[in-house]
Image (cartoon, rainbow, N blue to C red; front, side, top):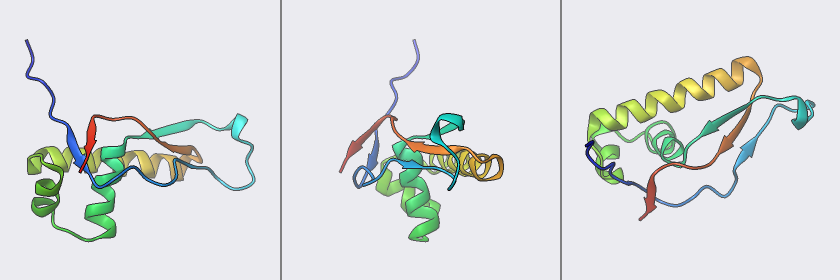
Length: 97
């Protein structure tokens, strides 16, 4: 039986949940889903420029787990930008601190 997954702590849910390329109808776009914890990892690491060690403590997870979440978020964002996909922020396994 696998170990239960820890909930990641986030400051709050984003005030928005969708981005799309300008001038392209939503019906014709593929979607990339960014989880709330991936959004939080990007916010802490890239926007607030907090070290991974400190950011992982704020989220209540280990540094290697934080690194995996951050890499996943960056990969999804780059895929969406390069391939012109919509980005939806939704879901995940988190709790609001």
